[in-house]
Length: 327
Image (cartoon, rainbow, N blue to C red; front, side, top):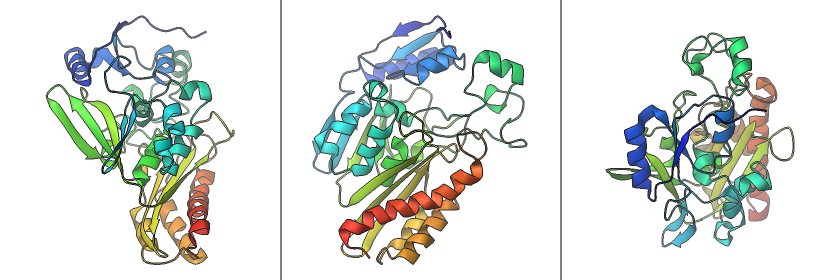
């Protein structure tokens, strides 16, 4: 049995206070939301904090609120709440992503903020300390070489959160809070293509919430995984489409393909102004798949995941085409 290492827990009442605690404690502290991913990392000795700063008592961190220009979601809102709240019904990709994550028990605890800030996963690094010690260190451990992509100059661990592609496709924004104030950024700017430092935020900044604009079109999220429940995505594809007989705007996002989720801007632009004819859908899917350069550090082979990227993008687009008459 893997046991938790000893640590001290703090429970601040505001995001600003949590940020100040992180600033003062530096690398000795870890931030915890639901803890469904973080606690196993403690047990595997991937993280050994002296102090855990828990967000479970932060005021105003939970809830989904309709606003004049869209929807606001607190970072502490659980995936179960996101999946079931009526306000999410018009944001189908987000609802589908939330309800496909993990298990019902985990979704009742895991938060939207935690899912977005998941550390990238790797079939080598996500093992026990004993196993990793026998194999030798890797780039993410601070020395050595990448064991799944020999010769790689950076960590190729995979971002495996479900909600990131959906929120990218929906054009969401993230609100980050620190002791001196807050800033709002496009959700795409939150992620960095680096398995060691995957988030573009200061160490003391805390993700406080998400804002999504008004739902002007339709969206969908599809997920490739070996089992039909529980598994992390080996590939996640989200598509949002606005149309009036012809596509006005289309955003295609992919997750589970590298250290950061990606938006296939060129593929989306191919569809604008036209109908979703089979040849156009196939061309857009092929362009989107060019962004996918997986390595052997996740479930399924890298070549299969790359092929499935085009297949899943085409499925998503075709799923949005039928009810709207875009054919």
